[in-house]
Image (cartoon, rainbow, N blue to C red; front, side, top):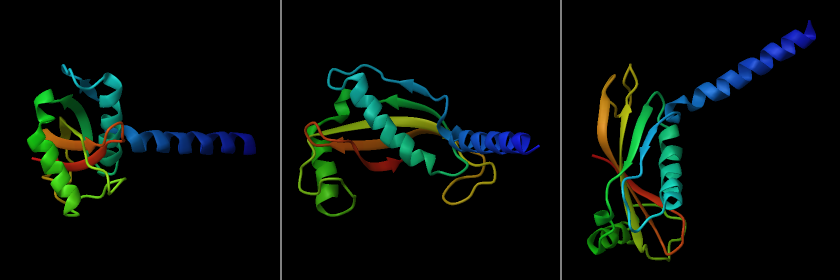
Amino acid sequence: MKKHLALFAAMLITFGLVACGNNIQDIAIDYGKSNIYSKSDMDAAIEVIKDEFAAWEGCELHSISYTSDECNSKENIDWVNSLREDGSITVTNESAEFTQCIEFVSDFHSPKAGGGAWEMDYEYTAWQWWLARTDNGEWNLITWGY
């Protein structure tokens, strides 16, 4: 009996852990075409996005798409550095200047009961995610939203 009870408890714990992560499972990823970033560069940025999204209780992520190389412009790099300099964002290395930025968009569904800043049971599309990094550094999530 104890053996069956232990097996049942282990199954419940496993199911609970798997169910918690369902808001970022089976998402469509569109890497687009880039002459700047490799798939591994993009995957590293996407992991940062997924980590943030995982904390959004009740939201379900459907897709993440790379926008374009045009987003890695001098103007946008200056913008993300200005956010770093004025303390608007938290970064892993406060003294290093960003040399690259990348933008993704995502589609996701908000919680059926709403809550927080979310419209109730709503499909958000083209939700922007901006990340930046120093030369060969890690991606920092700079800002997100419309």
